[in-house]
View 1: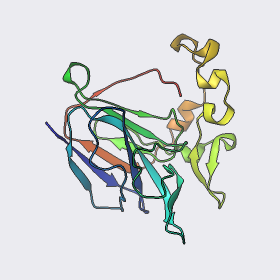
View 2: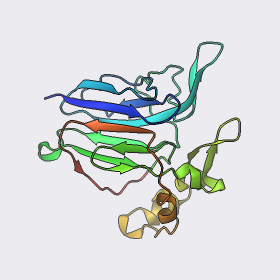
View 3: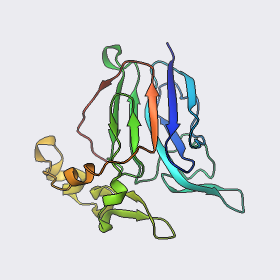
Length: 209
């Protein structure tokens, strides 16, 4: 049975969601599209068994040569469609596995690739504006100096402690973060909302880059 995905943009500017399907599952109906503020965009034909990631690209434009690009979340294809390419960090990720283990649908919102825009899901969300509180050493900046994303500590420093590798490569060795609570307490409206018509169960996972 196909699933309906509905996208809503709550920003003042157009967001360009990118979609990447994991290897082997059936494809999502699009790999990237323009999502202007206001009207919903619905994709009713998402097949059972689809799994992949969705993220938001913003501050996007087409240059004089006709190449499309974004200051944040770009998939570097020169087009709105990502055509199988993934996101450039930092990007907030919404990850899905439809009809997964036991026939259940799983999702999570991940900052393993850093943060760029708040994303809200129907049954669970991350709608903190982390950019507003991003430490300067983690900030990803556009050409005009504005903060367009907040890199993960791994992406910024590339050390074993922050990248969960070497002696830090197991859940038991994770650092206790004192930075996360104040960041996540600065709530803001989500950039866009994803509604999924299937019942979903949240899956909490240990993630590494």
